[in-house]
Length: 371
Image 1 (spheres, rainbow, N blue to C red):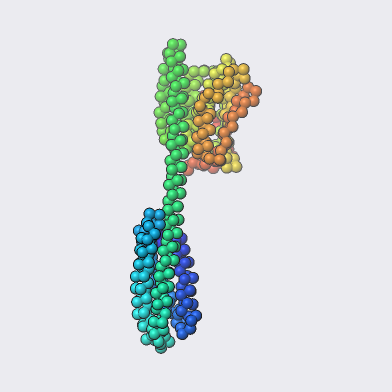
Image 2 (cartoon, rainbow, N blue to C red):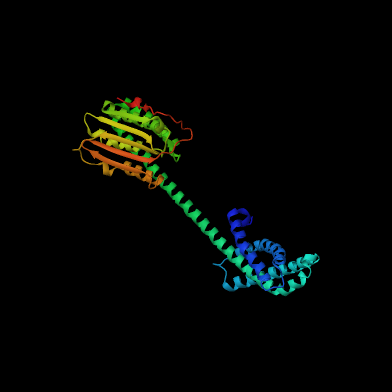
């Protein structure tokens, strides 16, 4: 389909170009004298409308002779020849139209006066064609720019998706490596616990397969995955691992990137609780207010223990995924205060389609894993 008929903005611009050109034609014929304003308007307005319709075909001529790949000679010959032929045909039709108007008493002799201006109108028709050709070349350039921008945006989205997939692909192998090490250690100490851990690990990995394919999931689904993960960790640490969670009901409906909490809680356990002989607590808080979802994860740690957190990939992975999904709209901060390490996330609150709005949020806890 012709682009002017496919996009109203282009058609409006085309008609806006023709409005002053039509007025120019009318006054060009009226000013020298011999033709009244009424006669010039009655003659040239319909002719201008006809020529505007005929000049729609100029798009195809411009498309067939692009400025970048066509030589100057080819462009000039093509458009000058097309302009002359179209203008000549337009004048012939105008001559017939002037004769038809002359049959009316009010337009008596208009056909003879038309002949006086026919050569001027022929040249004007050629110039009008060239103006319209320039207009179409501008539209072609705009369309090419729009397509290029769309391709750049698409490439950017694809690159971001590829980055997110690569980052998500790091999560399971990292956790799986740690879990297999734990199972290996348990086999020589407590075979039944090792078998239990294998079953829980299989359930956890099965659940991650479904969530990992999604771009975002409700926080409640992410919490359910976290429950499975903590069940595995409870096999390893027993009563040494305590979990305290407070999640607002409204926050549960907020969308988050999948597998975003598990690496942080895993870090809290490996780099914090695991180094404490008496164990400790992992505290999770999630609140939704003022259009932001805020999540914090705290854990006790031994300030005297060797600092190995920088070598982990969990926090960096989460930071990169959050930044990729919410560029310049999110924050991930890690702070240590005496014997407490805290990771705070703040992202725009995106509500799931099935979200229910509650006037007052009620606290939700991970009761299954609390010691």
